[in-house]
Length: 57
Image (cartoon, rainbow, N blue to C red; front, side, top):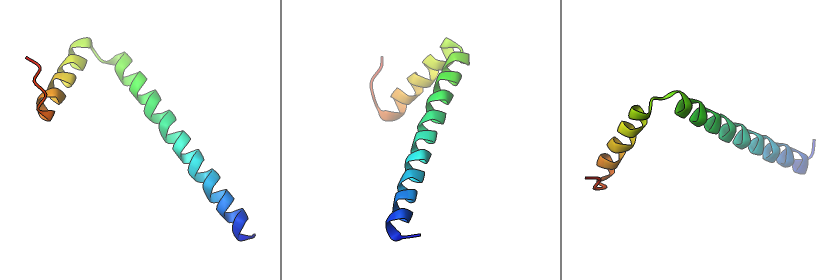
């Protein structure tokens, strides 16, 4: 196997891992958001605002 072939294989493997990661992250976000209660989502967003110092009320 030549160097250019191994570099090409490494790049395609890296791209495949990135695609897989984004797909799993997106599916997890949709799944968790769909199953969470609206009050839970509100409380989580509210806590993040307080943690980052954003005034929300």
